Image (cartoon, rainbow over all chains, first blue to last red; front, side):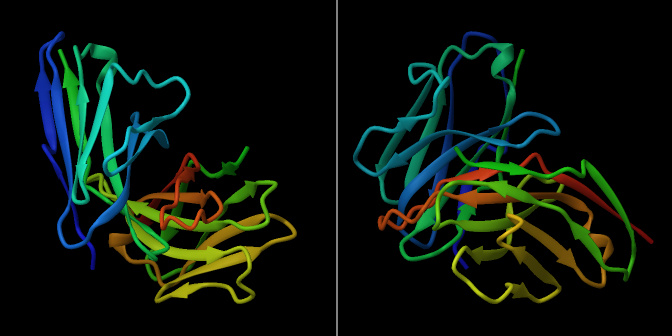
Length: 115
Length: 118
């Protein structure tokens, strides 16, 4: 089956620093990748949709300058949380779609803790 | 706008028994997809089952079946013969209409935490 690798799985950083999260499709080309945020015991909230080679589309209320998304290739998308603050602490999870496949493939998620 | 409602925050089921997790949805689109994903404590999202809005038969995948009642806008997940490893969060989700680009954007419900009791 298709595998999506997400790194790091856990990161702790100081307030004001930037954190980059990588999402890779290991054995398929991902036409589209999605980034979700999940608070404890809450649902997944879509943050943005990214297509290779084009700018990401952000959901309403998501700061694009705060959450930088780069989809440089058909197998890699990155989410950079810039100048992270404690309120950015959350579980971030990426997913990728494969052409003509009905379902999304999810990474294992990244738990971000900002001190 | 699309909306997914899961009214059961938590459910308990005895091992080897069947359990139904409820999901209702709201959409004005005629073409849509309904999904169930499982999220263990480790965090990854595991695809369980899919039902297309035009599918006449209820979807089944092993011990999972989806009870699709289109008129009621419900898509309940039935897990038969529950196992201890089934303990997890379960999310119902809906996709936007197929855009032809091979990509589906999902809207998730709030989830149901299932606990299987030995």
